[in-house]
Each structure stands twice: as C-alpha cells, then as structure tokens.
Length: 537
Ligand SMILES: [Zn+2]
Image 1 (cartoon, rainbow, N blue to C red):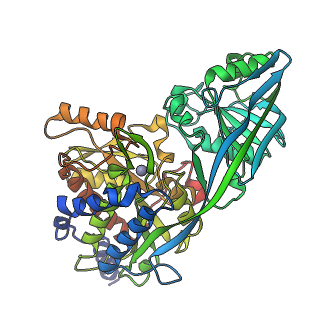
Image 2: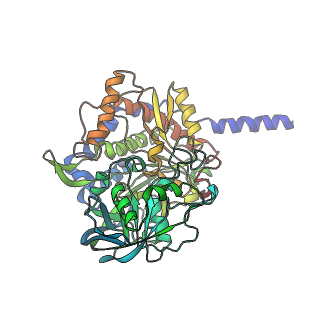
Image 3: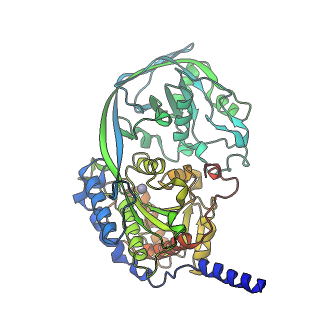
C-alpha cells in the first residue's frame, strides 16, 4: 500500500515537472512579431530614446500599453505599469587644469588627452587642492582570495591611483582571464569612495579596459547620470588617465610605474603614497530628470508558486540625440536595444497566449538608463516591485541575432548558475549548442542589466547571438563583426531591410522554452558553488 502511495506521489511530482508545451505558442514568435515593435521603437520619431527625453516617455508608454493589451496586470502599488525612476544628471567643466607636483618637478596635464574627469556627486564645485596621490595597486579587497590591497589604508581627503582589471600573475586567482567584478573600474570607484577618497584615477591601458583611451575621452565634458545619491556612488570625482600620464605622475614622485605595477601583482602589496600632490577644479551643472521602468506582471497559476517571479528584462533607453555623424544626429539604437524590447514583447505575446498559465508569475520589465550606468535595473533591484527573495531568475535581453540562423548561441556568464545547464539541455534538444562566454575577458557579465539582478543574488541568464551560421558563414561573421566596429553606439545603428531576423526567431523560441521551464520547475535556480554572487542570495 505504502509503495503504491509513493508511486502515485512520484507520478504526481513528475507531472508537476512536465513543462507546458511550447510548441503550440512558439509559432507566435515570428519575424514580424519582432520587426513591428523594433521598427517603431527605433524610428526617428523616438529620437534615440535618450534618458529623460520625450522619446524615453513615448517608448515607455508604448511598451506598457502593449503589455496591458496582452492582459498583463500591474505589479506596482499605484496600479500602473511604470515605476518612476529619479535620475540626476551632472555635467562637469574644468575650471582649473590638472596640476601635479612632486619632489621631481611640476606638470600641468592636458585634458581630455591625458586626464579625463567628471564629478560623481552633485556638488556645485569639485576641488582637489594639493591632494595627496596614493597608488593602491588593483584596489581590490577580496577575503575569499586572501587579497587586500588596502591593508587598512585611510584614503580620507586623498586621491587614489589604481590599476584597472585584476591580478594576472596567478591563473588560479580571480578566475584567470575571465573578469570578475573586482576587475571593473566601477568597483574601483566604489571601493575608494567607501574609504573616503575625494577622487580616484584609473590608469588606462587598452588591454585592461578592452577599448582605447579615446572611448573614455569621449565622456569628458558630457553629462553623466546617477541615481539619487547614496554611499556607493558618492565619490566626488571619477577620473581616468592615459598610461603615459600615469608614468609621468609616478616619475614626479621619484617612482617607476612598472616597478609599482609589479609589486601590485602580489598579496604583500601595500598602498604607496607617491609624494605627489594634485590640484584641479570642476564646475558642475546638476539637474534632475524623470524617467521610469515599465513593469508588468503575468500572474502564475499555481497557488504557491505564483508568489514567485521570473523576470524578463530589456532596457529601452539609448543615447538620444548627440554628435552628428554623416548628417545624422539621432542615435536610434535599433539593435541596442529596441531589438531586445521587441524580443521581450514577442516572448510576452507567446506566453500570454498559452492555453494554461505557467505556475510561477512572470514579470516583464523594460528598464531605463542602461546606457547611463545600468541605472534603471539598479533601481528595480534595489526598489523591487515584488520582494527580491521572490524573484527566482532573470532573463535579460540586450541585442538580438540580426545576422541569420545559427547552430550555436553564446551565453555571457556561462556556468555561473544553474540556468546554464537548463539552457544547454534545451539547446541540445533543439539540435543547437552553447558557446561559453565568448568575451569573458572583457567583463561582459558586468555590462548589462542582469548584473544588477546578480548583485542582489538573483541567478540570471544573458544570451548572445551565435556565429556558426547555417548559410554564408564567413560573410555573415564578417558582417556581424563589422556591426560592432562601425555601428555600435553610432547613429547608424538603424533598422535595415537586410537584417536576417530568422536567427532571432530561433533564439527566442529556445529562450521561451528556457523561460517556461524556469517558471514551471518547482526547484529554484541556484548559483554555482563558490560563484562571486552565491553569497548575495
Ligand atoms: Zn544595450
């Protein structure tokens, strides 16, 4: 008898784990289902969806009303579909140049060629007055690697000089060439701010940044955006310098940059006061902007599991109207990320058409200000419309495959959590494969919105287009590469009739299956043991 009961129970458990069949709705994910919203969101009428602009408002209204039309309901206290996100914009101009003086002499640096600087706190003026410069190596404190570059050093009133990336001396440390958050410049700014620094200068090198100094120079004199101020972002001045400028700075104090950098590769490293003093003044214009995240909920069917959520995210913002290039000043951001919003709407269309609702609830969110520092997703994660513990997974979409059908797909953060194994299984069932973290060394994991979900412990998945094309492989790989080189963050990131959206259709159908299985499976996704985000859960 007992064994019969357990057999029945076992069968019931198995039935509970059988995913809703995707086959009857995946046909709704079509080229047109993606192309329609993509065409509208990336049109000139939306003026590049710059944060706080009219295009920002229009994009949100469009996405929110589309989700409402599909039958989604509100997840917000006010019963609406938009979570207001307050944003502060700061534009800095140099009032006095960067002047460095030490025992070996004085020099006046050129900006932005040698030093770029901007305020990251809403002060009318940011002043370094003969501030002491301290070299802090990689600026990392990581107990799990028994690594501490600070050794209790107090940076109050001082300016920190720091290397980008993480120590490369030992492949067993800091995940080898895969970049951890410790290697990101934003981490360096946060850490020195916590220790009272009045500014931090990151030493640029092309290998450690993944891009040339000109990319950073372009930010000088531009408006920078922040969430209303908290301790994490309260560093008065963020700065970068070129490698040559860093060498010159060290020389003024009688130090050799290469010797300092070698010392910073070991655990024994201690901060080095360089005997150099730095002065400069920034005048800042501060303004408040109104933006928001679209948030919509598709309630689950299971009385218990519907209290839990799977979040699908895709940022809607792009760069707005900017510097004119080839007669065009509208940065349409068609691939980045009108395409991701369109993809999210295509997924929502399929899910809301299922004959039976998934067990868990699904939240569709289109977040703001990704291009301004992942601000919308940070706001969502720190002011979650549903309890953060109820969010079991995040699927983020930032860019889709516009180059045609591929056998493979890529995943940023491959292996970091259990969503990888699920995706690999679903891919295999569909005769496809996953390519692990193609640009892990560039720290891609920390450069889109899923990162803010990871920071609060939510396992996340971020798929990218594959490169093993069924047709015209070599040519399409070239076109795909050229997109990054010529159109990424340019006015020419525009929708084009030559795009092959059949690739995105395949990828999204696969993603739909992953999403539904995550929404159905009673087991909660988890981080891989020892992962940097395991503790945040
Ligand atoms: Zn993007």
